[in-house]
Image 1 (tube, helix red, strand yellow):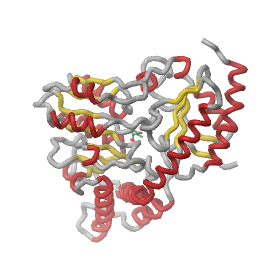
Image 2 (cartoon, protein in one colour):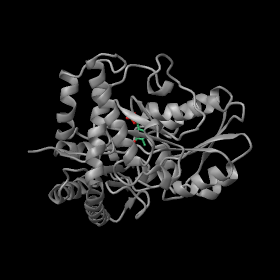
Image 3 (tube, helix red, strand yellow):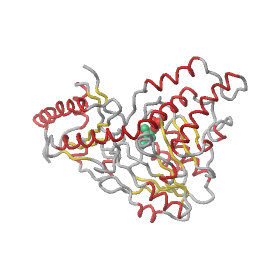
Image 4 (cartoon, protein in one colour):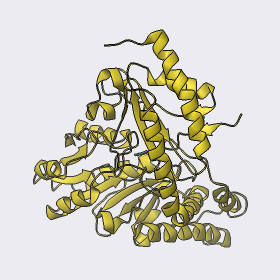
Length: 385
Ligand SMILES: *Cc1c(COP(=O)(O)O)cnc(C)c1O
């Protein structure tokens, strides 16, 4: 029985074309790109090519790309790098209550150093209201960071509107685009951001590599100190193999994103309808329309999501309960908490995220397994509250 992987929001398998592009950089082009000799030049060429392709894909200049060890480091560099560089102007940051931990934790860290952070609420679909951003801005605000799309519930945020508000007030705008990058358009001028985080392993590239887009003229200091790599913004010998892999993944996305997102949106909507029809007390999390093409997030009333996920796993279906981080209440994700999912439902979270290999038959099989599983679980342990 083949494994059906439906957890692409956590990570993706590396695409064969990406592997093919990476291999020469493992075997032959192993030089240090800072070296003057031929081997160094070959390695440097690999980085240059990714920089060129990535810049074109997001509509940026080559000099505006800073390669990092992934989305987490890109977020840390954006938050701490902009905060420290603009400390004279103020000590206030605005973000949302549904961000990834890689945003929330650097913000918390800055709070421990005397910074003030506003965590904006979201509506029941998980959307930030641009008006709330407007009223949160003070003379001391140096950065606004709102994610482009949420990793748990798939909601796409109105970044363009929020960027416009930020710029009206002279505040830098960052977005964590790790989930949206390569899945929906992320041209930096269209969404208006000054900084944007992205990661390779969510788009069929390798883990441990990503980038931060930094608009020219943005005041930012490095958080990793050492050599002069990445224009002095990120020290350390470059992860060439990873960076070349990122470049190949971007190339793939550039070719296939439009058609693939259309295909996945159709599969997604069909699956949502079928899931909601399985039992009356199943709810969809996130926005029905403004959501990532590959994200389906539901809550099943009165059942533990973890139990369902494990049952599906036994049947070779790989899904997820969302994210592991809780918000004080045991086991309920901070995102489901923020959108106000009642407790009896919030424990029953199940996230299904589709990918390049997903076909309709996989989803037929998911429904086929899920329906009796829910009925069985209800029979043994349903607690009506
Ligand atoms: C996966 C993810 C990250 C972290 O990226 P890594 O490359 O795994 O460090 C950050 N933000 C969001 C929204 C993510 O989905």
